[in-house]
Image (tube, rainbow, N blue to C red; front, side, top):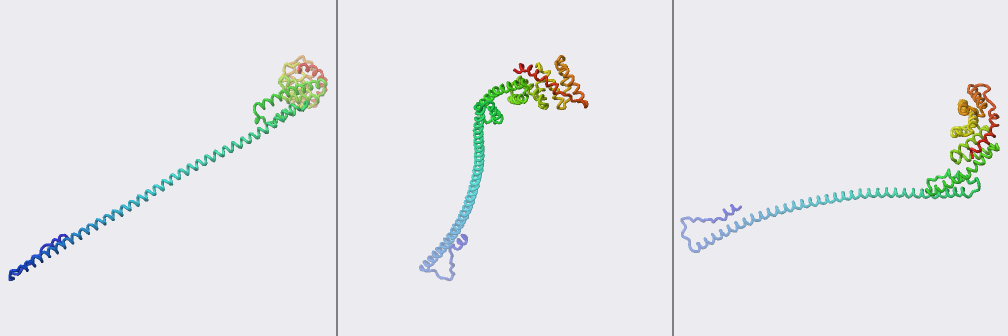
Length: 341
């Protein structure tokens, strides 16, 4: 466009025909004026072209600026969108972390509350059981101290059934000490009554008193003596199944007793009466080897023969054992009484 403007804006040279006459001043002035007008026109055209070019350039610059603004707006929108997405994602992550932390904390607190509740219930149950045990222990102690005579033994029976694990060590010690004192008192009395009944040949009373005495867990020496008296009483009452363990305990436990040979004779008899013929024969052989000069020698030999025949299935195996041993009961009682005391 500039080139075309330059071409157009160039002065036009008007050629005059040679045949024309020289121009006058007015014509010259008109010619100059025309020339100036033409030049002005060309200048206007050139200026208009320049303005058009400037407008086109300004328009291009404006378009580029609009494009730049549009790209900037789009990039800003994308940046804001990304920032919003990141912010939302961060918020979601933080909220999730807080929620997980709150959940864990809640579960921990709930578990702690559950444990504390269980401990509280256990403490309540322990407190209740302790109070119950204390009341029961008070009743037992009262029975062992206030009841008359042998009725205090009911307190010992109740103490055996009492759960002392719920009591304090001091309470258990007080009950055990009181029970031990009561056992010694009543046990010694029962033991003495049993020995007196034994001397009087009152075997039922012997069984009652000495059974009660042995149930109190007396010292070993007294228990062995009581086992002899009680086993002899059961033998005389023909309750041989009960006599066997008592007499066997005495024979095995007190090998220095002066009445051990008589106890072995009664034990052999009770073995034979309960059908243990081999044990009866072994007991007799042991007695004959230990006490060859015993006053019951003839009875031991008769018992050995009877046991052998019974073991072999003889028809005449049963001897009148009880009448043979019964006359020895009274002398044995008189002999063993000092040892028991």
